[in-house]
Length: 73
Ligand code: FES
Image 1 (cartoon, rainbow, N blue to C red):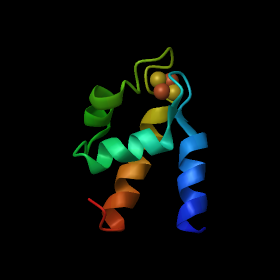
Image 2: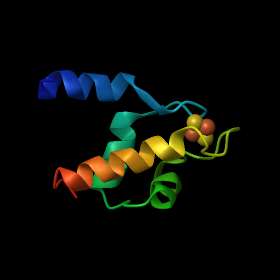
Image 3: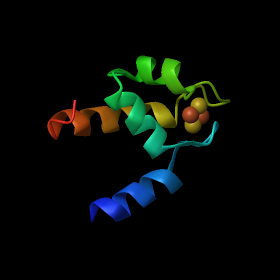
Image 4: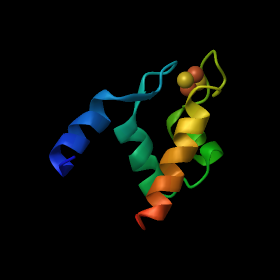
């Protein structure tokens, strides 16, 4: 996927459905230094919805792992 398409998809894809938080917001928090799910949740408010992070927690962890593998953090 091109970088432009990825940026667009990041904006419209919700990682935390309960709190309607986009993948772009989660990625920015990770780039800004939140390198654990707990840190990301504290930074942007994910994980605080009715599911208590059951749905978004694994997706956030996967994003952290991918960004580490890609050398972005
Ligand atoms: S999807 Fe994030 S708290 Fe429920």
